Length: 81
Ligand SMILES: [Zn+2]
Image (cartoon, rainbow, N blue to C red; front, side, top):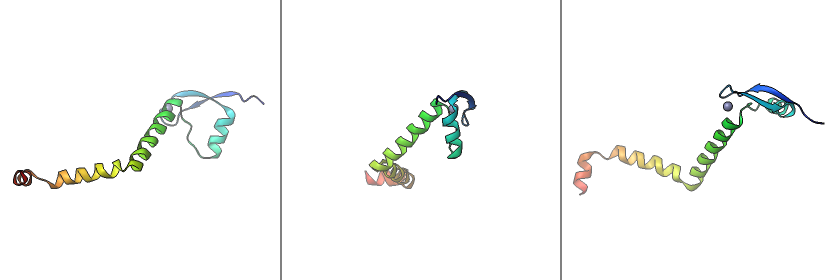
């Protein structure tokens, strides 16, 4: 059964997009957002970046480094050298 394309709005950027009716019905049933391919790609890219950072431990290092920088004031840096 060929599914027909229907006009829907991206819930993120409000762009008018065409999706097949089946996909839209399924997404709504699952409580998923209707989004255009651009928003979808951005979301996936962000998720990948976050999980990659967490996996490599880079996320933690970044936070620690920020904390260290906050704690070190100019005087302390001078006394070290
Ligand atoms: Zn969008």
